Each structure stands twice: as structure tokens, then as C-alpha cells.
Image 1 (cartoon, rainbow, N blue to C red):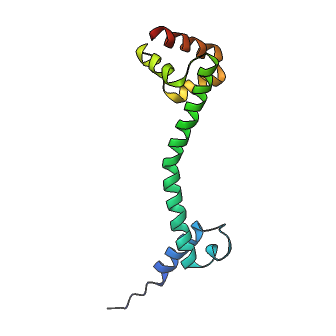
Image 2: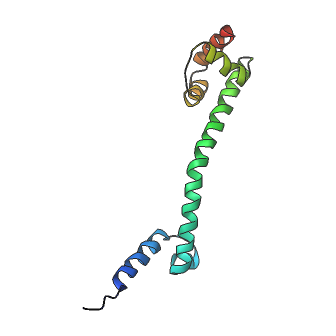
Length: 117
């Protein structure tokens, strides 16, 4: 039986990693060992950041809603509590969009929330 050498598979694997490391500074884009470590670490950062992004956007939406509530003499927690009691189910993303783009509609939501309390 013929001896199998893995040169082609090894080269393909290494080129795949080096392609992912393209644009990295210094040897991280040219040397396989350092490129492999850099690509692995960047994958970790990307994985973590995908989870942090959800957290960060929720914080942003809550801050925007809170600012809109302050203009209507309410705080965030009483506003959300009032909406729940009034059976108004809007997510925080939509509430923040309303607070920014349509202050009149947000004011009417605040009035309904106050009335429900």
C-alpha cells in the first residue's frame, strides 16, 4: 500500500487559518502559529461580543425610555409597571423608537400608564 503524505491537507488547513488572519498586524498575519493563536482569540472575542451586544442594546433602549419618561414626569419603573397593568405589550426596542421619533405618542402611552396605576 502506498504511503500517504498529508502535505496537501496540511497546506489547505494552514492557508484557511492564514486567510482568516489577513489584515492582522505583523507576524500574526504571516506566521501560522501566531496566526492560529490570534484567530482563536478573535473567535473568543466575537463569541463573547455577540452576547454582550444584546445586553448593551437593552441598556440603551432602557436609557432612552427613561429619558422619555422624565419628560413626562415619570420614572422608568413606574412607567413599565403602568404599561403592564394597562395590558400594553410593547417591547423595549419599540418603546425607545417611539420615545425618539414620536414624542406625542409616547406622551399618550405615559398617560395610559399613569391612569392604570
